[in-house]
Image 1 (tube, rainbow, N blue to C red):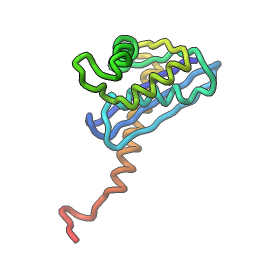
Image 2: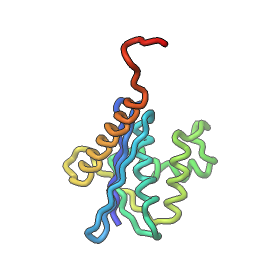
Image 3: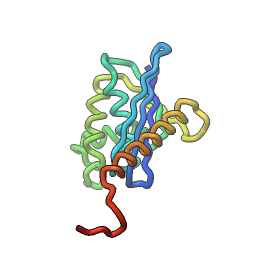
Image 4: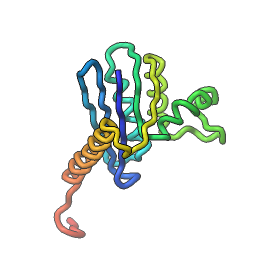
Length: 157
């Protein structure tokens, strides 16, 4: 199983989108989503969480990300955070704790190799995940904009 993930936010913070592309035996599943007010880091994490949550059985996974935050968080910081009860070395709480904790639960269920790929380096699946994440931003911002549209500038009732 191979999963490519990406998250995006424009501006950061602001509307965000994420994408996960799951590839297995010449089959593909594409997952996308977004939030109206978020950060790029949260979207990167959400992409990985959603990709792993989509797996129906225990799996061996190569997960590709262009996010150093996600890759380093998993491979360098996570063990220490757990040992310190989800606190960083300075004693402050880990940012995006809900997503890191969910990711920690998921990697207990699956064998995951975390592979970093440089963003915009020509990897077709990484580039596609990036496009899908930006499309999710647009869909999220469009839905949010239509829900909160007012009539006329400075209109009062």
